[in-house]
Amino acid sequence: AQSVAQPEDQVNVAEGNPLTVKCTYSVSGNPYLFWYVQYPNRGLQFLLKYITGDNLVKGSYGFEAEFNKSQTSFHLKKPSALVSDSALYFCAALPMDTGRRALTFGSGTRLQVQP
Amino acid sequence: GAVVSQHPSWVICKSGTSVKIECRSLDFQATTMFWYRQFPKQSLMLMATSNEGSKATYEQGVEKDKFLINHASLTLSTLTVTSAHPEDSSFYICSARQGSVSSNQPQHFGDGTRLSIL
Image 1 (cartoon, one colour):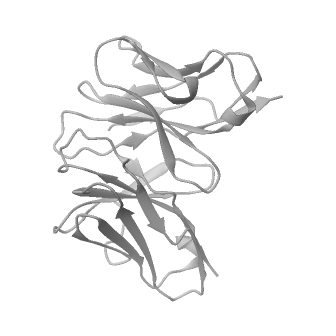
Image 2 (spheres, each protein chain N blue to C red; image 1 turned 45 degrees about the vertical axis):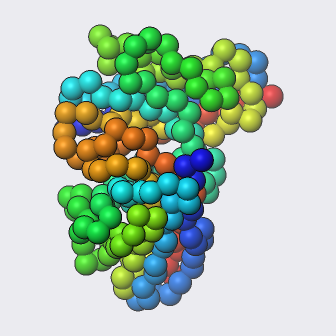
């Protein structure tokens, strides 16, 4: 079965410090990988995606993610966290070797940035 | 661009009533639409996938007769929760994508509907 794991329920970081939100995947083939952010009572907003090419992907709001094929990981990073980054972050994978392609989501990680 | 509008954003109703949630793609043709359910502090669980003009494909464990999905046009899909009960209370999120079920196009999400059944 396809799955995406986010091992941390919550990540706490001080404003101005770098942040990392972890994601590993178990999806067949070479999936596309995504990060989304969700604010309270809202849908998901797209941050970035990896399809192919450079392992470091840059996205919205200063976020970036590093793809590591050997570790099947796609960790989200930001060099300097802002209080406004506090939200729920979801990693997702889109399998490319099946006919029916829908995103599989991780369990989510709540990011709390303290002033 | 790629805006998905979901309505209503919040609904409270009595047990036994049916509730319809609308999902519209405002600036693109959504050949494929997805409906997700999210429980508090949990991830999004895919309920069903629908292609415009076709019957929806439901995920295992999702009751077809309970959650009726209609995708009659390229810009509108509806989810009707029939005879809703308190256990149906949840946050429902729709997502839309250009292209067929096997497309690589990105999924765009609505803002969700919080359904509370009393």
